Amino acid sequence: MSSAAPPRALQPVLTTLVGLWALLQAFGNLAAANVNADEPGYVAAGWAYVHGDFSANVEHPPTAKLLIGVAQVIFGQGVVSARVATGLCAIAGGILLYAWLRPEVGWVGALCGAGAWLLLPHGVTSGVRIDRFGLLDPFMVVFAIAAFAAGWRWFRRRSWGWLCVSAVCMGLSVTSKVPSAVMIPAIILSPLLERPTRPVAGHLRTVLVSALVYSTIVAAVVIVVYLPAGLVHSLGEMIRFQLAHDEAGHLVVVGGVATTHPPWWANLLFSVEGMGLPAAAVLAVGAVAAFVGADRALPTLLVGAVLLEWIFQFTVSSVALPHYYYDWVWLFCALFGVGTAALLRIGCRDGPAGGGRTVARALVAASVVVALGAAAWTTVAIANERARDMALVLPTLDRLGVGSGGILVAGMAEWEYQPYLDGREVTTPGTPGVVAVATKDSLRFPIDPAVRALIDAPGSRFRRLELDDVTLYVNEDAEVSPARSRPSGSPGAGSPR
Image (cartoon, rainbow, N blue to C red):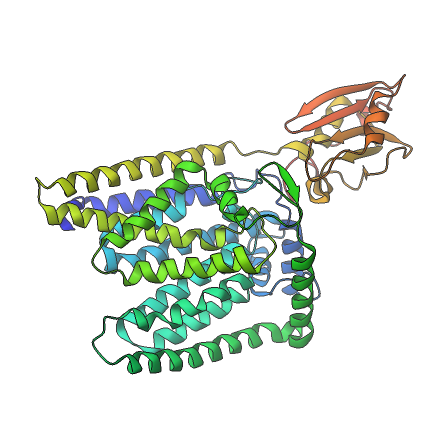
């Protein structure tokens, strides 16, 4: 391994460069993008939580929202503070992965695993990195990474203190968002990965004791976290909501088809769409390569956790959403680091003239080049983020001197327009006082034919403007009152609030 690594003097330099790049991606241009669908709800709930009101957003556990509220107390109320908090989660996750992997697979593998997590695209329709939005998933994942890192330390050292640390972190993960709970068996069953140096009964006894200890601590964390919110009521409301949500399904577009009950492979497709094929392929290759090494305990643990998440997402849950793959992509990033180190060990073992060395190093070089290209594309995409679509409607109307009046909206969900129209939105065709119509082509929300009829009616005078994916029709007969135009820096001018 040592002959495959850069000189020691370069290692801190390269590590620092990756860290600085990660900071740029986590916090650069952070306020520019439109709000994500769930951000306003989580931001409002978090602010309420830190002020003692736990009645909002009971469909999800409180830890992540409470931390979003703390971030707003520190950095100021609003979406940007929530994004700072999730960015910190991403950075912390990368640090944890690096610290976990370095003693196991060496500097190169640790940097590749952490770098894949910090720099590759993990996107949704809102933006190129999920953890640049004030969502719950980054909190769930960073606590899950901490739980697995501590659980691995327990596996290696059999220090029960590390098992307790792992359980506390997993409790915080589960109380941020529930799906990480399905990965708990991977940690508890990890003693079975040991080479058979003692009777199987001894391993089983360890598993049973650890399961009891782990579940007790996780349950205690859940109780402590939920006590301020009302343990029985809040848990009951969350369970009722999630069961109803699972039964009713969630409207998404999969392969060009809108459906509330997508096929089992939908989250796999979303992962490729969110990361891009090059990044997804690199992580898949790394996961396979992780099993080339002699010690397969760590990749087996990671793949086991992936399979548990997949079993839940593909067979148990009937809901698939474009950001759900974020729950398990960190495991593939860790596998990429392990796989890179395993391939480099092949190169060292075969010697300078070995055929395996040539193939292994060529595969590593190709994977790193592709990963760096995907990371560079991510950075460019972040730098180009800006207010889009409905965030541009009011500034455009102000620039045209169109006075106050209703804005008929069609073809989009409420979260896409409500943060930007200052209550001027209208959803019923024929409502008097409409000065503009904003439409968007959507498989999920087909445009009412009455809206088209209004625009195309004889004698109607609409000026058509394209605002990214939104088409804005401005009524040329609307009152023009430049003196009442909105100042450019006022709310609704395009920046998330």
